[in-house]
Image (cartoon, rainbow, N blue to C red; front, side, top):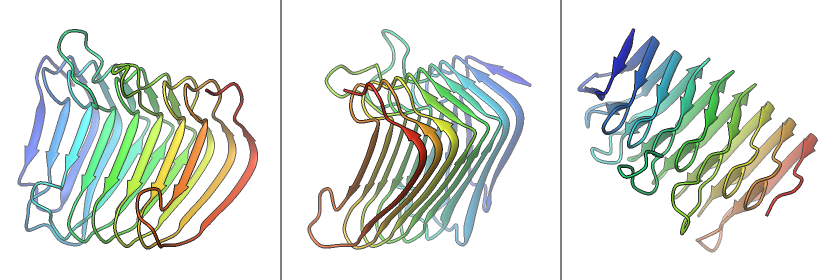
Length: 242
């Protein structure tokens, strides 16, 4: 099915949402907005399979848990997705609108698995995972491209993929057979703040031709005192970056 010129907004789903074989094009706000209920607990699953979101004025997909701050963990599962041109509509978009944005509040984690997907030409980050408070972020990326994102705001260019973890908790990330090329700021930008570790494995990854760093891994960027930074990089390139 295709939805044109409208937002698909889902509120009140108690345990999560599964969307398959859907295109959302030219939404006047967010392409798909999923509001996590305050009473949600356990794993709140958002599964997107063969979903395409293009040219939304705001985020392509927004999973919002920082309004109600539920106790749930957000489990994001993206398979064969395409997210292009979102938050990059001239005369309509504003700064900091991403291909996919997950805002996690409360005490839960973010668990994200992104497989065989494309994030290209979005106004801000291709993907932003924003975890507030106690909780970890676990990211697995396979066969996915985060290319040419972040051009919208010349005062604050954005990244291919941006992961921010605040409060007590770790970031554990593994990228395999993926690219983060030609983004206007960083290609891969992972930031773990406060208590917790940053543990990153990259295998067969290119992060070339970005305006900022190709790969930016920061432990305790904003908060003193915390954990370790551990990386394993195998067959990785980061060439021609700003």
